[in-house]
Length: 145
Ligand code: CA2
Image 1: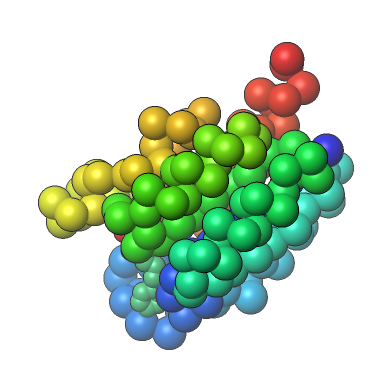
Image 2 (image 1 turned 90 degrees about the vertical axis):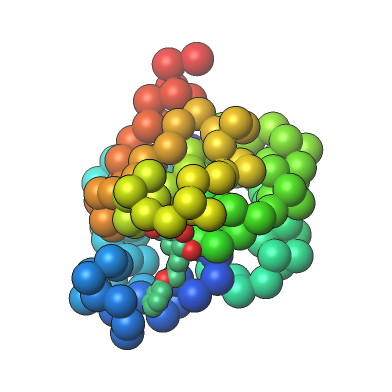
């Protein structure tokens, strides 16, 4: 099984500011946690981060036929991007939405997620562990079919 983990804008800045919301760990720490979990559950993983919406759309399209599941934290694009929703719908790959913070407890503008209706589930508020929970959910969903 191959999982693609996609991260949106500014997540490469983790650990640098807003530690009260996102913690002190860095993006490199997040990637290490994901790689270690992939090895534990015996799945292949590719991790990709971009600050550009079109790059994320391109990566989703390129996953078609090559990836069994997608974990995505679209960051700010969560709340704005019909393009990401359309790309996910176009490829039809099982997808889990992740947020490090609990967006349900934050500003009104973070209450909207354009991709959520497409996703198998949303994991929010568990920090980096949410990514690992999302990987487990995809493994379970795709092996229970
Ligand atoms: O909680 C999450 O994972 C978010 O997707 C993070 C996004 C935010 O726009 C979403 O509403 C919720 C922000 C990611 C940017 O993270 C920063 C990293 C370092 C310094 C400031 C922000």
